[in-house]
Image (cartoon, rainbow, N blue to C red):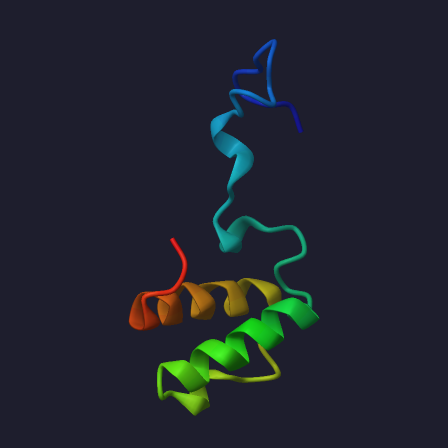
Length: 77
């Protein structure tokens, strides 16, 4: 895939497609990673929502759930 507006200095000024919506991830349907599982477990416990941790989540689903729980716990960006 070609960047929409490549730049001579891509490391200092990345293009807008550097961050994709989880719905558009090529590997979004794969099982969540170990790092996602660990962080999701921690966040679900901190948020008091143990049911938010589900081992059957895909990478994309886990990413969305992590984003939601970060908002609840105040973690993350």
